[in-house]
Length: 252
Ligand SMILES: Nc1ncnc2c1ncn2[C@@H]1O[C@H](COP(=O)(O)OP(=O)(O)OP(=O)(O)O)[C@@H](O)[C@H]1O
Ligand SMILES: [Mg+2]
Image (cartoon, rainbow, N blue to C red; front, side, top):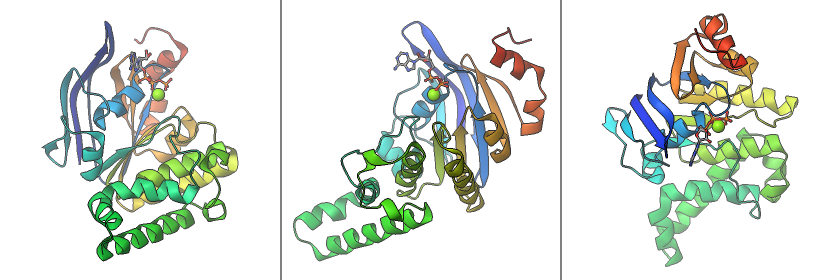
C-alpha cells in the first residue's frame, strides 16, 4: 500500500532524514518512535507532500506521489494529522468537519454557489457525513461549540475526524495521545484499533510507549534520521539499543 524508499531530507547543513525506507499494509498499524528531534514529524511531512525530500521515493499503491501536493496526495487516499492540531478555532466543530470533507467535493460545491441542484445535494450529503463522524467520535454534544473551546483530547479527536472526512486508506497520525486526558486516551486507542480493523493502513508517531506498544503490529525506531531497528513491539521493547537511544547513550 505505502512504500517509502531511501528518503533523505536536509535543512541547511542539518541532515534530518538520512535514508528512511519502510512499507505499510492495509489493516496494519506501524508505530514510529524515537527521541525528540529524530525526524519523525519531518518524515510525515515528506510522505504526505508537505515538504519535498532531498532524495528517495514515496509510492502509494505502486505509484510515485513524490511531486504531488498534499491535497493531491489526500485525493489518492493518504492524509496526515498534525502534532499540534490545526482546527479552525473560530468555526464550530461541525463546520470544521464539513470544511475538511469539502475538498473532496470541491467541484460540485463550487457549482452549488452558482445555484446547482446537484451541488445542494452534495452539501447536504457532506453535512450528514460530518454528523455521522461526530457520532462516531462522541463529539455530537459539542457539535455547535467553537473548536477553540475543546479540550486537548477533543481537539485530537477532531483532528482525527477531519482526516477521516476524506475517506483515507492510509492515515499518518502524529502524536495522537499528547496532551490527552486518560479517559479520552482509552477512547482514542479504541478508535485507532477500529480503523485498523476496518482495513486502513495507519502510521502512528507517538512518545507514549505503553500506548504505541499496545496498538502497533510493527514498530520502527527512528534515531537521528535513521531507522535504528524495526520489529514487533516485543522485539523492540527488549532491544538494548532502543533503551540506549532514549537515554542518549551512543547506540551499540
Ligand atoms: N523546517 C525546518 N527547518 C529547519 N529545521 C527543521 C525544520 N523542520 C524540522 N527541523 C529540524 O529537524 C529535526 C527533526 O525535527 P522533527 O520535528 O522531525 O522531529 P521529531 O522526531 O518529530 O521530534 P518530536 O518528537 O520532538 O516531535 C529537528 O532538529 C528540527 O529542529
Ligand atoms: Mg514531531
